[in-house]
Image (cartoon, rainbow, N blue to C red):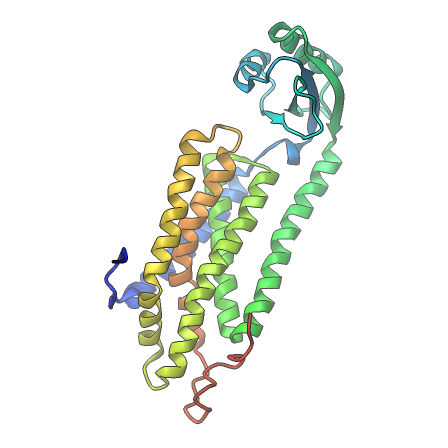
Length: 321
C-alpha cells in the first residue's frame, strides 16, 4: 500500500486563475526590482571587502564565545567559521574570522586587528594568529561582477538546453520562470536586509537547478500528452500534465522543505541566509513552474499540426537528455 499525498486521478483546474497569478507574478517582480534599486542589498564581506584572520589553539573552538568577545567592538558583520582538515593535528583547532570593512575606510585598520586579537586572547590565552589577509574593494567588486555573470551564464545555458530538448516556446517559458525566481529572491533579501554574499549566489544557482528540474518534469509530461491528445485544447493538456505530476511535485518540494525548516531553526546564524534563500526558492520555484512557465507557453502557443507523425508532437521530441 503506497502513500499518496493527492488522489490518483485529480482533475484540478490549475490554469483557471492563470490571468490573476501571472499578473501577480509581474507585480511581484516589479516590486522586487523597485525595492532592490531603492533599498539595495545588504552585501556581506565577500562583496564589500574586509579582513580574514586565521586562528589556532589547542583548546576547542567555541564560535558563540568568540562572537560574544568581538561583539562589544562594534565591527559590524563578522563571520566566524571553524575549519576542519585531515592534516590537522588532534589538538589543532583552527577558526577563520572575517571582518567587514568599516564605513568610510579602504581596509580594516591595524588598530582594529589588534583589538580583535586582544579580545580573543582574553577568551583563550593559548590562541595564535598564523595569518591575516585582506580583501580590498576592487577584488570585492570583481566578485560581484563574476557572481552575477555566473547566474546569467547559467540562465543562457538552460535557455539553449530547453530549446534543444523541447521547442523555443518551452525555452522562453522556462527561463521566464527562472528570472521570476531569481528576481523575487533578490527582492526578499533586499526587503528583509538579509546578508547577501557568495553563499547566497550559490543558493541562487541551487534554486535555478531545482526550479528547472521541476519545470522540465512537467514539460516532459506535457510533451507526451501533446502527442496523445493532438486535438485537445492546449490549456486542457496543460492542466492534465500538472495534475499527473502533482504528487511528485508535492513529495519533492515537501521533503525538501522539511529538511530546510530544520536547518533554519537549528542551523545557526552562519548558514541561515543560505538556507533561507533555498527555502524561499523552493516555494517560488514550484509556483513558477506552473503559473509562470506554463502561462508563457500558453500565450506563445505550440505547433500542433495534426498531419505530423504520431511520434512527433514537438520539434525536438526525439532528443534524449
